Length: 392
Image (cartoon, rainbow, N blue to C red):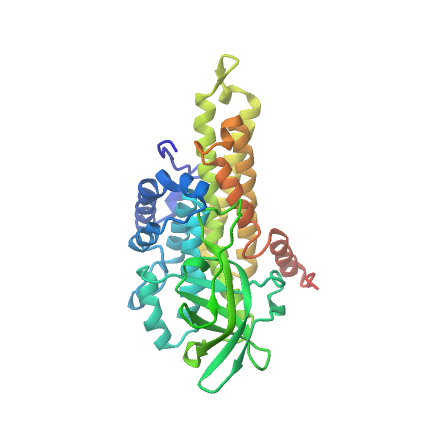
């Protein structure tokens, strides 16, 4: 891969709405991505490998649980800072952002929000330092958009429970030291519990043959009569509210992250269009190329304003799940459309690893589906504005 010449684009001067701390965080993460991620990400994707050295770097830049209070190992940052970090990481690669997003929103967030004090002290500082990696088990082979139908269950056995079932499409699973798992108890209520690698009967088969998120470790969680101590069960949550609140935090991060992928594609297309000569002039001089570029920056700008406002609402604890769904759906679709248009501007070169376009495009095909599909988020908005549930 060539040098990472990415330049940020801020057509509506949204930076003026950010604090100096926000901008310093962005520059720090961007510098790390340019130095440690960009030079090897194409090769990692070609080999379908997750570079394990990224874990240490992510911890050092504070990408694991940045909004978790300092007393538990986090940086105590605000939600806009978290979003900015996710944007810069996904500018590098969606798989990289997924690793940090899962660790932060799907593992550290539920432990902090629903866990006991003992659970917080035991796991959060080590997760923040990258000493251990976590994953999140909700989706099952037959239950994705309908998590309430899950069949993974645990049975009370006195001082422990016995867990049986399986989860799939789990980011970080093959490398995870712990898994935050959602399962039904003897009463059919959904509970969260922490399963540790090494517990007998717990395995994490890796998913191979992916065309998307190739630099991310994906796998299954299989539970075959796994004995889990009762102290590993979250004491402060029952029902779907638990896992769905985690997904809201992750979806918020995705809304920011997708802008990073879109910016990378736009920046590459803009630069290439000025350098590529056809019919005696740069292709940027042609009307249809300018149309593509103008529409790209327009949609990016709209997403930047939308997501900044969502960040403000999130900081004030006023962001609703439906608002988060709207931003996730809009921004990922926007990024995927821009990736496809950027590929056309690059012509045949757009399918090569010399440019990031095809990699982003393939990654975004997963991002538009996971943590709530494109259509499910549309129906969440529909329910919010009509009051009528179209899910069933």
